[in-house]
Image (tube, rainbow, N blue to C red):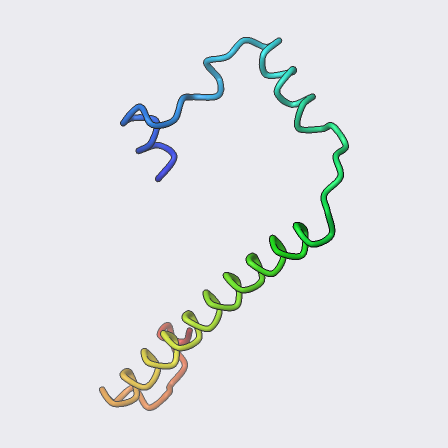
Length: 84
């Protein structure tokens, strides 16, 4: 949805508007082999893992809060369609 909104606002352009030759050139550029310094790669990997861990932690915390709330409402952990 964010991509759609960005295109509608003119922030991003549609990829298919390019010609077949332009798309091929773009994909060929992406397919080229390149080398990255170990420290730069480590920084990127650490950032990705950190974000994934943060999202996972937040998701687990949210699920626990919902489960506690459901049990307080009397669902007694009866893992029906409320099971997260």
